[in-house]
Length: 143
Image (cartoon, rainbow, N blue to C red; front, top):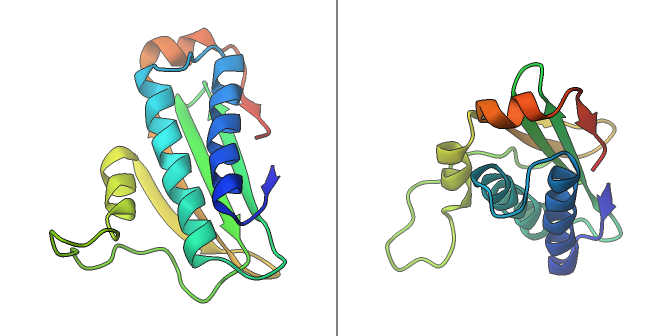
C-alpha cells in the first residue's frame, strides 16, 4: 500500500500491517504482531524522516509466507541517496539513532536495495513461530 510521507502515514502503515496480520490469524498483542508492528513503525518512520522527497509517498509491502515460516516487510521511499545502514552507536543522551539497531536485533535478516526508477527499498524478515506458520494454509500479501 501507498502512504503519505508524514508521521500520520507511518502510523497508518503500522495499523494496517496489524490488521493484515489479524486477518491472517495472527492476533494483535501476540509476540509476532508486536514484533511486526515495531519493525513496520521503525522502517516507515525512517522513510518519512530520511527518505522524504516532496510530493512522493512511501510504500509498504507485507508478505506472510507460511511455507517458509517467514514474514517479509518492505518499505520503499523515493530517496535513493542513502542506503540503510547501522550508524555509529549514539551517545546515551541522543534522542535518535537506534532504530536500525532494533531492526538488526529483532529481524532474522534485513538490508536495502535500490528501487527503480528512483529510491530504495529497506526490507527485513522475521521467522514465524511454528504455531503461526501452521495456522495459515497459504501465503498472503498485499499490505
